[in-house]
Amino acid sequence: MSFSNLGLSDPILKAIKEQGYTSPTPIQKQSIPIILTKKDVLAGAQTGTGKTAGFTLPLLQRMTEKKINGKPYVRALILTPTRELAAQVGESVETYGKYLPYKSAVIFGGVGINPQKAAIRKGLDILIATPGRLLDLVNQNCLDLSRVEFFVLDEADRMLDMGFIHDIKKVLALLPKHRQNLLFSATFSDDIKKLADKLLDNPTLIEVARRNTSSEAVSQVIHSVDKARKRELLASIIKKGKWKQVLVFTRTKHGANRLAEQLGKDGITAAAIHGGKSQGARTRALANFKSSEIRVLVATDIAARGIDIDQLPHVVNYELPNIAEDYVHRIGRTGRAGNEGEAISLVCIDELGLLKDIEKLIKKTIKNVQIEGFEVDPSIKAEPIQKKKTPRNNNNGNNRNRKPETKKNNPRRNPRANTKR
Ligand code: AMP
Image (cartoon, rainbow, N blue to C red; front, side, top):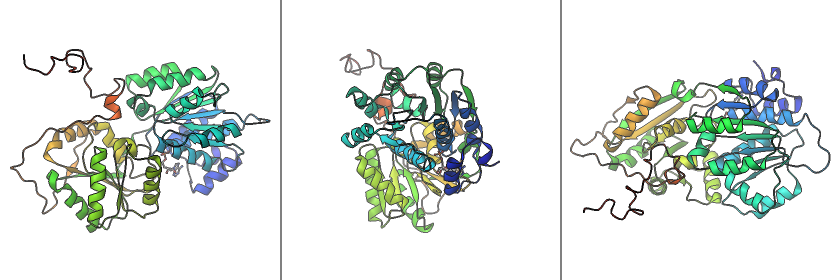
């Protein structure tokens, strides 16, 4: 099947051709014709499936159905959970809309607001934004969303994980009643279903296989190793394999910084990317990684969400994630669009519980390959993993792993909690 059978017009087909895409991915095959029929859509698709083009292409096509005279106004609003994802969706809109007259802008926090205000003032057709900065601009009377015709909520599950539900509701209240809504999410929790009920009008459900749990494109392996020797093992794997590009995950920002620094000392160029870094530093690190100036990008889960790097051959879990689903998101960075990928996890004794959760989720046992010279020391005892405060377990109670805080177990509210009587 080719793109030309899907109902897209020549300017869009030309842009697709320039990207070198020969056929639509499964999500695109399903979503494009349905979105073109003006229906609301609830789509289950992860990053790596081609979901961005899956909503951007038909959205651009639908926009061409109406001619606008005079100054442009925001007709399409795309909300994303992170700045990186917003930037990448923005790039896709530019790329696929190259031969169309629409103006778009990407808006997120952590950078100056004035250039964003100036872009809005000039007039925009398509706005890609994270919720916080979008609401700031609305509150400062800089932005009118009352004529939005198309609303996309991208990675809705991650939005809820990050505690954006109230912001999303505020944004919805600013939109006109009559519009087309598209909700994309990798998972369908009860909270997502509730949001979908509120947002979508008689939606068509589209779901594609979670390619990274079922697909053979990503080979998964674990290497058992003592915690203290992980860095040495990682450096050895990178050097022996002559790896040119690898994305490495750590659990914490501090861990990411430290590892990037240590790899640098081992003669392996590396940079860390996490929520504690300025937007400029994050963009620079990503650009340097993409241009192969640095070999290793060390990332935390939230920062890496949505990072779109074509043909990334290796992903390493330097530390397993606390949330099993993050493992699936992490390894989804490799083995994309028909390329083979490899996901390696370095697992120490403390992480065996986390490994069990992951294997339960993906419904398979990951092969354990012992690297010679890095055998585990049986005298080392497991230590519990400190669950650091992250935006996700510091939010409005949306964290899947957190026990609800009650007066009884909260030392701040009950001074006698955790103290012996
Ligand atoms: P996404 O799931 O939107 O993050 O897209 C994953 C990657 O697939 C991106 O790098 C896209 O450029 C690429 N891609 C999207 N659609 C296609 C297609 N039809 N053929 C080949 N690559 C594609």
